[in-house]
Amino acid sequence: MLSRIENIIRTSKSNFDVNSGVCFCSDYKVSDKECLVYLDEQGCFEQPIFVDDLSDNSNINLELSLHSLTKIGFYYSFESFIVNNRYAFPDSDFYIYDIDSSQSKKNENLAKHEAIINLINSIKNIAKYSYFDAGVDNAIIFREDKSLFLSFEFDINTILAIKESEVETINKVSSIFLDSVSEKKLLFINELINLLTNEKNESQRFIFLLSSISDFYEKSTNAYQYYLRDFSYNKLKIELDSKALEFAQKIQSVINESQTKLIAIPTVFVLAFVSFDYSDLLSNKNIFTIISLFIFAILIQLFLNNQFSTLRFINENVISYKDTFKRNDIDKISSKFSLVDKEREKQEKRLILIEAILWLIPVGLLCTWLFGIGYNLLAYMSIAIVLIIFLIKLFVLK
Image (tube, rainbow, N blue to C red; front, side):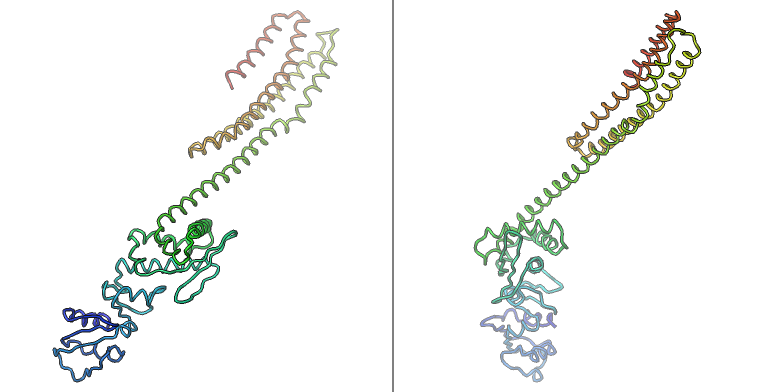
């Protein structure tokens, strides 16, 4: 029916005028009596007409009440539509004559108005209190150290001043305020309070927000991105500290877990030297003692090799873990593992020292025995072989 009312007015456009809340349609050629009947039933005529007495194609002067037209969803101007529907669109169909727009055919200005309504509703959603007073919606927003009174005053000029590109930004802000509790939402609320409390004229705060919506969104987004970077850095720092401590403890446990086994080394060597018979070097007891020392050294060496393998495995895990951060370009954070590397090197040196002592005693005793029985060359060869093995281990196999 609204489109048919529009047609009546447009067909009278050459003889059309609006004055004092009345729409004058002069010399309208009757073509839609059913619509005229509907307008009459709705009380839209300022001067009564008798539709039944009208004939098709006859001319008639119509005086339509704009107030009555508004009640049935027909708005002559966009300004009239805003005055009557500032904070919510009508539930039923409507048509705005001067911008040729309706609920199903929204032009850019109607889209701007709708975005403003959504923004107001979203801000009311985050407000502690909201109320309607003297034709204006109001909201009070709180945070721990500050509060904000926001009056949602705007008019047609406010809407027309909004750029088309800003409509999407307004809708983005609205969706964030309507979101469930999140850090992003809280940061946007914080920036909103900071921005608008600087505007001392309370009646202009909402207009100021709309005029600076792009700057507000950009600043709030930057604050959120900074928060994410800071949060991620701290979370990563805690994770790295925890991992560094975990790896350091694993490295230290390599020596700690072997202490009960390694404590037997000096005990065995003391017993070997005490039981060694220097008066009868070729006695079976001496030969058995030397062989026993080498068997003991071999068994301990197998254990030490296992400890070296454990350290190498831990070191490979550390390198792999640090590489994941290098790919993310945060090498500075992975420098925390320098302490882990130093601890690993220290434990390796301790194991090498234990290994040297382990073989020094039996080889020394063997060489002493060989010198004693006159096999000097064989003694020197034994010392040379041991030295070569240790040099290879220190400089080649590292």
